[in-house]
Length: 472
Image (cartoon, rainbow, N blue to C red; front, side, top):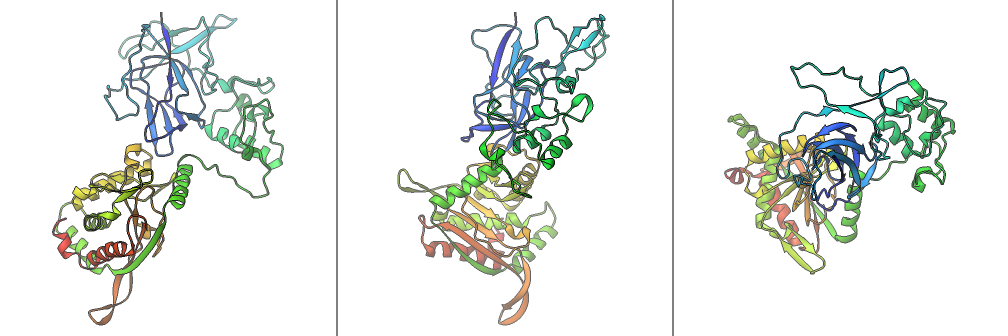
């Protein structure tokens, strides 16, 4: 006899307490194996795939795409073949951590009921993308597809259509249960604007609610809002909007960034100093290194190498303040964060043990983490644990900035664009490649003399990199 086990949203680590469902990777009726990814979620730090610790048949899913769930809330239920007093799973939390069994091919279990005319017809997927958590009704027979190279014992039933498409326009929509809408984008648009989809009439096939239906309701002012008997909606979501007003939920990555920056401003008494530097020799040195053959060295890698050398001389800036113990904690390693702008917002991937890497290794790691940031595949571990941040805002075409310290770090070095400017070189006016460097630091960990000494050393290495380049 099968045993139905409930799989809850696991602890994703790094203090994360909630996650938003981005995409379900399985349907109700699918056969899953231990450690198979079943859902893709977005946390405040990254997009991650969550593996299921049980193997069996998915009987229900909880939460629609776009729904935010707290850690510990049910994700899905799985019917396993053999009951056990203590179900054993792999212990995995995220894909890539712990032991990982080879991913098995998913098999779809088809469900069919018999209509009045005696022909087998597909049924709706109980519990699919509705959040009701209902298991398939008794009496439904399930058969797995035949293996490759063998003939099926019985004819396959056609794939089940989405349950939303089976709801006619004239049917009364209950307070709970399926809503005639498939797209998670349509659901999100309605949710963000306080529109109750159950009170809309869809213009799509079989009454399917499409994006145009929600937009028309918002444009004409006829969008039905949720009532007290409906699911709770934040007050801001149903508040009247002035013409042209747009409200953007401050959640997910954007919300996490806002919270961290606000905390930094509240807790850290920061100060900023800056200096212009002649980067002509640094640019020439990079050109010479790359012309000599081998992997190309990035400018960011050279700047990172200069940073780690400066932190070795001024360790006060590679630290954090333990407010409870009232102690400054100086760190013996440099985990270098760097700011990266993505479609999801600003993220700060971390290069582990940057102080022990040469320029070629730094270049490769910067490239790997940047690509992962762009594709949204950074893990929480790759976004946390930094001890110092390098912010190259020059890529946005600006010269200077006063960065906000990445809490709980003690400092951040900002690098502006490198552009030709008039500069006095060897007693004569010349056109040189000039860059503005800025350092924002926690004034609790050091005074201006230390911060100025750090920044001056960085500027000197930029202007005369020959000695430093010998160790790259």
